Image (cartoon, rainbow, N blue to C red; front, side):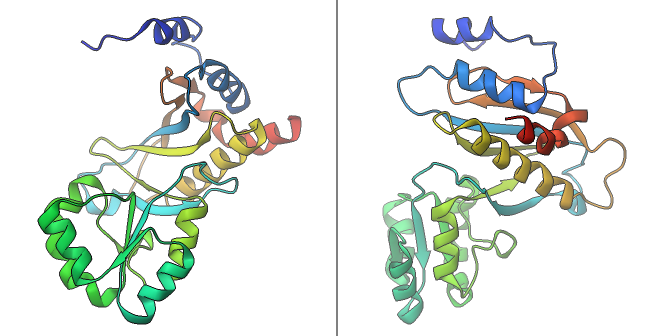
Length: 240
């Protein structure tokens, strides 16, 4: 059984575990409970009415957060020639072809948060599947990380593009900003995530789609949001 510290228990005592809040109230409470001595990440968790055991109900993609993510995202690019130069100009942290594949395979180098590859190098990058796959770092066309437009991809991930995908029980976890963000910034990011999930709803998904929603900071407890009200964010933005 997980043992939580005093600060976490104090924060938990301020949360009604049975109650369901609107998005605006949830953001207020989560920001209030984010008392760590660093800028905590705010994460949205959504349980969807999908069956991830079926290929046509697995969700995976990326979206750009309007207010950015607040994270310093380290981007590695597998590319050669002009595309490598393009990646460096766009601000990629690590760029390479055979040499970068070798560093990952032989040295266990994993000093990056996002990996992007040009299509011509995917034959080599694919050999890193056992290393990159379990860590969610394998480039994939569905997430825009296998592309010839590496400059654009690097810029987007650096400026707040985030990846989402269902886990084995149908949950999706997406960072929506930092505790230091102003409330409207968090609200527009949450709205963007919710609308994206609605947009990509699988045709095969039946019954209630958004089943549960919670918001939390890195060190804080989850605050439950009413799934029936989670798309009311635009109205709540008007009230801010």
